[in-house]
Image (tube, rainbow, N blue to C red):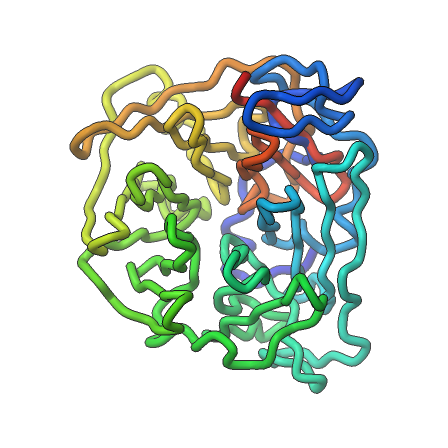
Length: 372
């Protein structure tokens, strides 16, 4: 995979990977309290890594190129859109897989553009270029659409980047017209997190209101870099990284931030001393994935450098939180040897009451259940 010097520096330490739902495998259908249980999930123990059969390939997308998927809660569907970018792939196709089915398989929702040009933000057909999607892909419930919140490192050696908020309609399987959502304004970052109301937040603490189609800077909080996720109980956004999160600025140490999504204000978070915190610092995780576990009231954090290890971050009153390690059994596939990381491929799936992981395209989706 060809990369820019910016990405190449970041690729230092990671293994290779597979797709799985974190914490269980399946033999027969059963219904679990508060959720669903397709055949592949039935009978699996809690906090156990297991593969979901038949889910390799990521639909043929170039998801290994610093790219991600998002979850569509009504159907437990994972959607990949325009993943690739740089010199990795020009494919702006959209691919998905429904995990509520007994035998999930990838499908193409929309094939990529047949004619494409390098170093542009939109191809000649008007559709958005392929790009490294990082943490910038989100599901917009009010539109039943997938959003790419800004383009970072689009297709071509010039790695074009821009503020476009590009929407793919899941009802029609079509890209919506340019400017359906207003561009990131001013363009000082990409949309890396979503609050409890479905609004999008950039690293700089800028918020996009999906109802009014407007950008504001409501407070003084910032998220820095990804991964970032929302504690939906308190509507608090949280980001956690080591160094710059990409592996070439480790002297910065552990950086954790929070934002109150109601006010936009926030600040730094630190952690109580623990063996888990020592392990986290020693691991120096890069390009990690993180999401909120609403059943246990904590964030789960996963990166490619420690295969199978899941860190827990438990919010506390105040700014000093707890960081631990979740006891798990089984083992997912290792992460990508390229160092491109996990990105936003470790996510909570509400109806399944568990987490799904895709370490890399060649992997089987893996999962781990969280709640009895």
